[in-house]
Length: 394
Image (tube, rainbow, N blue to C red; front, side):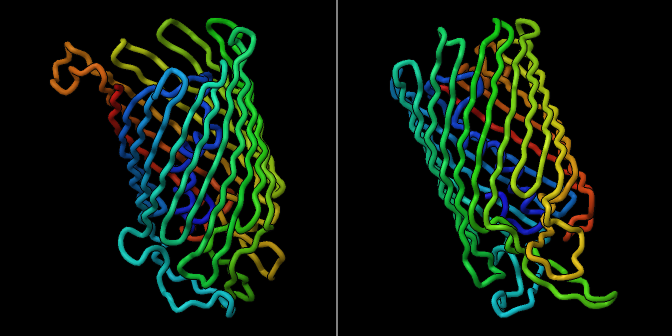
């Protein structure tokens, strides 16, 4: 669902959906294999960048522990996107892509409004947990269905945990500025091994294999074939209809003191489009009291470009793209997250309920491409991310 947005909106969809998609794909909380606790979580997230994109995406999740052996989780998320690129007319030469529409994105403001529904059921099997997950997402130019099965099972007196998941995703793409409808199907297999080395160190190793078939580009982007200094023709981007993506990674949680911990991570990725990437992450968490905690996350990402990506095209080629996500470059992210739990002695009436928690986060994201973005003509994208939420445990 992250490859279909117009220009810069594609970047937003990738980032905004990153956390929920990861949770659905893996369906395993790091270092845990328990039935989810009963809670209601509501939050409002926002994104603003220098490419002219604004995103507001509220989400609500509900988890119910039906018994000690099973539980149910439900989730709703809505992306509300405003993007300058989606209001532009990208005319493409050729009858197959002819359209009488002169506007991209939705018909009215906001430019896009996506609705996503998710559900999962978890069941203990002996000492392990089996989870069934489903997700449906729909909007004016895209629909997506996802099904996954995950299993987490402990060994060696619960010091070792094996985690596996299999995911199937079925997407339909039908941009408003095109006359076609295309499909994208994804198969994802993930395997993880969590090992407790001591009371202060716990590590997870994971590997994933993803096979994608179908249309994997942005239906609103166009390729300019430069014929001379003053003339050019415009065509739709073209990519291989198959992509195999692989990744291996390791994450370690190190207890520094009784109230603080350090999390370190590294991930290596490579695929059949010749993209390779390295991700390095670090986070430090601190419980200042039993009521207040904070986490500071840092992340650096480095990527090579797809073999068919070019900043400019001077002749028609078999494969062509201007998608910034397929360009070479790097990105950095810093995020501060806070959690405040209610207590009876709190000075504010709202926080006297110990079942309530207030959560919030603020972050900065920067991505540097090796050539300017096709629409904004900027090499650097920077964005601000804000989130506030409330959680109720019952």
